[in-house]
Image (cartoon, rainbow, N blue to C red; front, side):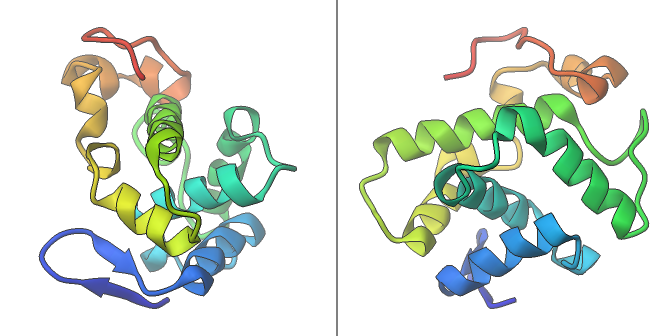
Length: 150
């Protein structure tokens, strides 16, 4: 996977690196060590913009859970797939895309990674730590308790 890292998010070198992440997620061939925060967001943006056959709101649970299991992970009350965080970042990707003017995939993804929506702690602007990291929030999407998602 081609990425760069200069004090901040690991940015993607080109469209192919992003599509490699997305395809590897879908076919469960992506090495576990490549499934980073940046890869999560890149795959989400790629799915939202280039895979009209996939409904992120409906399909991401099965996609990510299946991938986690394929690489030896678990999806339980303490690890693996987290429904609320996933849907929070789906909303963030859509919010970013609504104001992003770039048409190039790599520019959209790298731009996202440098915005508020691309930060690891972005969900904590909407959720208290206790709620976000609760078992209920991991199992199913819960409503924010600080302020509404965009």
